[in-house]
Length: 71
Image (cartoon, rainbow, N blue to C red; front, side, top):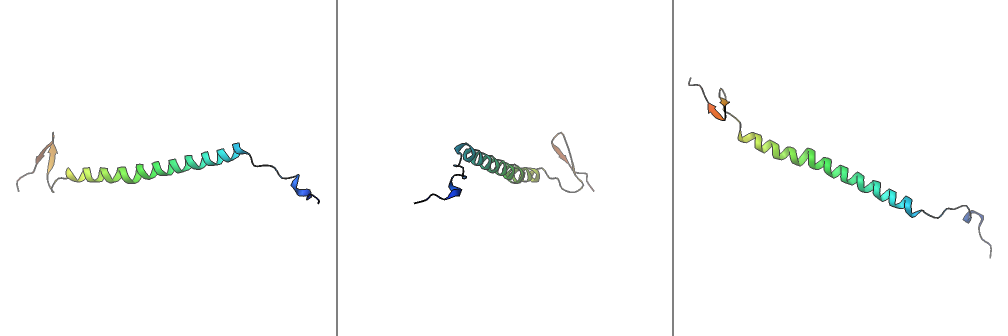
């Protein structure tokens, strides 16, 4: 029985390199999840808060009081 010549040229897989790949993948997933949360979910909550404070046309607010001129 003979051993093929290319067996001696192959390197065993490094456990350190495998851990680095998983670490890079994990960091990339965490960054993507944070970006989605920051831009989509937090902006959705801010848009609902802004609608509560909308004023009717020709009205303005001073010190938290709504003032509408009589026409």
